[in-house]
Length: 271
Image (cartoon, rainbow, N blue to C red; front, top):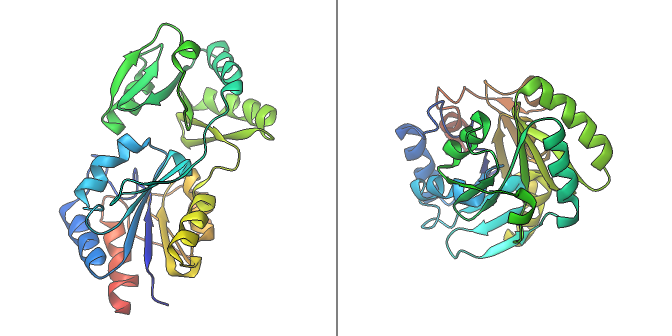
């Protein structure tokens, strides 16, 4: 099987603990693209937070794609075309906001380069801002600040308490929207049916490819669907146990150029 599409999660997968792409991994991915492989950066991050890594990997030159908001948006990075979007229903926002407030968690969303929140000094809000290299815009009233279309909200906080809220909200919202953690301290709140696999199915159809031609690499809970869906699903050595259990192959960790190892083993060796 000749693989034509390489789908990569970012944090804990493509990037190391410093949130950087190592020179070796970058060089390997540039070579893969020169050989005709299309790269997709698939992340829970907002599009703005994925863009610097897309630039570093020259996705605009090699016709790569960004799948942001866990699949809420797909962008052709060469043309800038928004190929797919799935937005959050504003009617559910008051419930999301009240849940965060009742449990003393910060809630945030996005507007271009800004993270919108009432609690800019919250340590977990700061993690999200740093991760995406974005700016914070403090708002007096979160609900009143969301007048534009949004792809997701994020409730952030201490992992043990957040797990309790996740179960509560999932039970209440399971027929309306997606509720899951992308990190122990990040609770994603997205439109119903949003996950990386479903959005990748849309992209594959647009590209005239099938899933057997796709490699998907990830480490977290939100990577599970695409790893199960792909022709070759790869878990990082640092991945969550359930992700490893469902992968076809386990590569090296994100500190050991695990992504580069996958490319060398399954793409370069097949040429």
